Length: 384
Image (tube, rainbow, N blue to C red; front, side, top):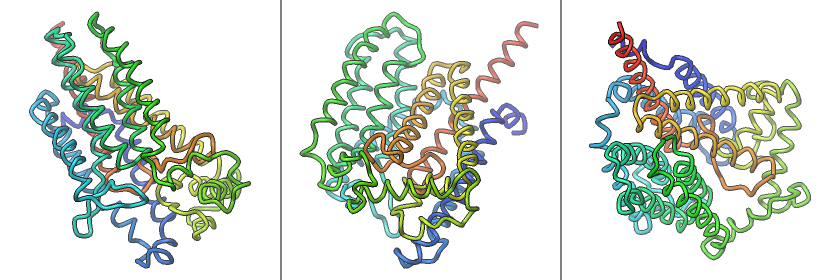
């Protein structure tokens, strides 16, 4: 067991740990006031729920995920992916509506968002499926389009909930995986060209799907000059995010000292947590956080490039796309450069389903790093 842990990507593990701890601190800080004043629960309510998920996932990750060879995923991933699609279909009958979208299952005190699980399932499914195709050289249309077809079905099920933000992220992951998948094969050229067409069609679908969106979601498409529309919901939210960023200055007001979290900034602990971070630790502190994300993304690309298996390379690259798209859409949204879509910040925003899937993929990438290091070690032994 000790030898296994020695082969982990320790830099990646440290960053994941720091992000998990910092995320819990910021969830507590950003949610403590609204928990009492708005949700009428104890100040640590959201922190405790988030901490529970984080602890459980770290235990599962360190004692199970990193010990399971990715070669065994072929027996698990397909079932996981198809089950998620079935659950997404059932949500229209048994789901609950939150924030204008029927995207949730409520099981007692537990609320689950199945569309978050589709993101990780899609990445794992692509890795396992395309490795098999590439190794067997089965580049016929009946084979190569199967993952894309199921991905489009998943995208459609999420889009008609309607959950525009999640649908866009799923489309982004799907498109980037198909177009820039880290594999070299003549048969891949056809798939790449098809991916470009697919991306265009998915973007067109989102652009023309106004009749699928709720009135609240349509309002989000009006995103420019938020402070001139302070009385409107989207203008009010983004403008208060600007105020939080302005309040923070270079060094911030100190952890826990945000004023915008006093119900000025709605959902401060979810998709608008980054302005609270800037307000409390300043622009310089936020720059350090962004630098950590850059290091994290670099480690994922390194794992993808050096992976000893095709599936590992695809999964690591898919994880890179997942984190990058989430960061880009969230940060551009709070800066009023694109419409708000309610997309959370990886590790930092409150959301059990989201955190669960982020940590799941991180530990899978650690397993890929372990297998790469074992492969390198075996090659060295054989060369002696």
